[in-house]
Image (tube, rainbow, N blue to C red; front, side, top):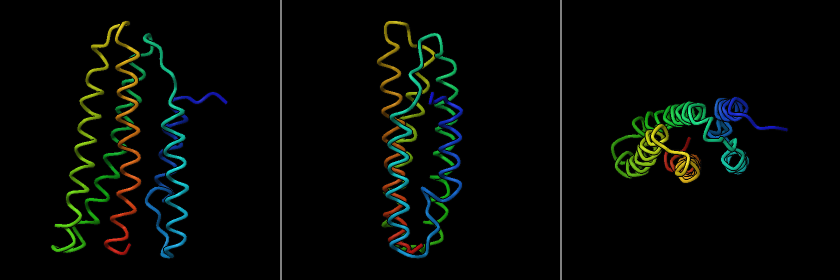
Length: 153
């Protein structure tokens, strides 16, 4: 099966929308299993990003912008949950959110370098961008679990 940007975006959106990454389970064992499954999907999606050619630079830029926007939506959801948790919890949880925002900003900066890539720098730019994307997705999965445990939801 050929993995396209559309397939990855659809998979990511479906996974996140159905609670795979932000498990809605009330049972801790179910939530732990949901997280384990989500992390497997996250890692698989990051590894299966299409291997864009230099000629597909614009499509790669668009795909990464869409992925970043989706990740930012989920960071915003976590932020809203933390804000409802109270002052004491927020002071403990805020550094996790700040770290996620930093990774998001790093990915955004990396995406901004794509249009200036030359054919000779393409592989490096593409690899660095995919690596930033992978790091953000993994951190988001881990931090979602940690924050959920701290605020009990």
